[in-house]
Amino acid sequence: MNAEHDDPVPPSNGVYLHDRLPNSRLVSFDSGHFPWEQAAAAYGATVARWLNGEHAKVADE
Image 1: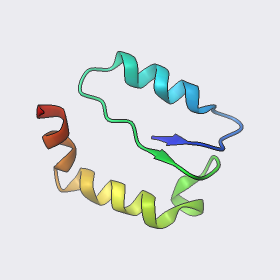
Image 2: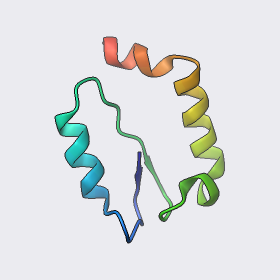
Image 3: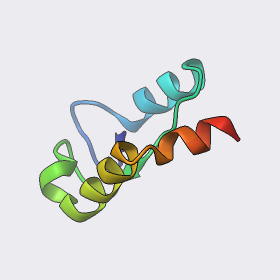
């Protein structure tokens, strides 16, 4: 998860981890440090997809 306007944790940190973790999926939000509040609908939809196992389909491709 990345927040594009996160001052404490720059988006480059998420990219760095994504590039090094197997089967990772990077999702970026147009928000600051608290995407669950500032981009609640997009964040909630992403979590729902993960809970439904849709992240595994992406990793298997």
